[in-house]
Length: 332
Ligand SMILES: [Zn+2]
Image 1 (cartoon, rainbow, N blue to C red):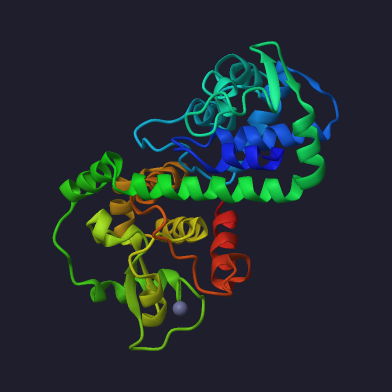
Image 2: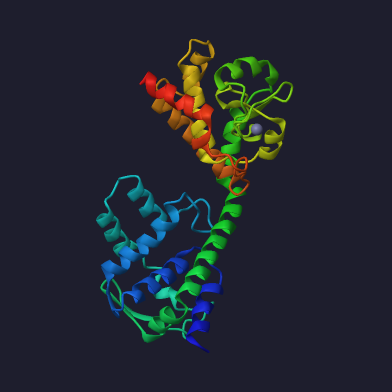
């Protein structure tokens, strides 16, 4: 067998209960690029952390099969991105806690610990990693290909974990919480004139003009999960856009637009203002944070059941959205 076969054996076979093999695979290829065989534990930790930052910096994705737990790396990245620790502190935590299940276990295919042992590296745990010739020659010959494969495999695992998460206790708990708060469906069409006053006569999802009677009232966060018809979650849209969106998760920019639309209502003296204030908070930051929490809940339930938005719609080019934001800024 070639080095390449051993490498693929590690990456592609066996049950992956977490994504750490993908992260370490990428880390090894990156370290090999630097050309030096002896790698300080701190440099190893920094590169390994960087792989998770690249991955998780784009959004929260589950890194292991058990949805009620987070991996050590997820917890470290969350603390760093949340500002609880500096980068150097994060690197130190990775160095101390990040590798117990990772470095000693990487060089196995399935349950076979002998066949690839020390083929790609040796280590003195907590002190240094020594890259072997096999790693340098792989990195030289197949770098691009192997990185792509690792990336694809990583996405595949996350996808599998998300689907698992969709059936998890967490998702059930979220559904139940909203169900308990829920109440009967009201006649939504009565809200149309009111919503038009704050949204204009343009579709929330595509920003094109709407013509009566093609004006639908839609729940931005799907009603089948929130179980309510609160005005802060209702928008107007074309029937076609409504059909496309259905009860799926929307991109975050629509939630930000919803925040701006709600603030437009809060800037008026409409009686709904008090209701929104009671439900989402008294200050703009509280309201925005409350909507963010709802969105995170919905994301936990819907996961990959996602709609990317109307094709060609760019929030920055949406004249109505721009007016909303200008108005908010002028209000200071
Ligand atoms: Zn539309």
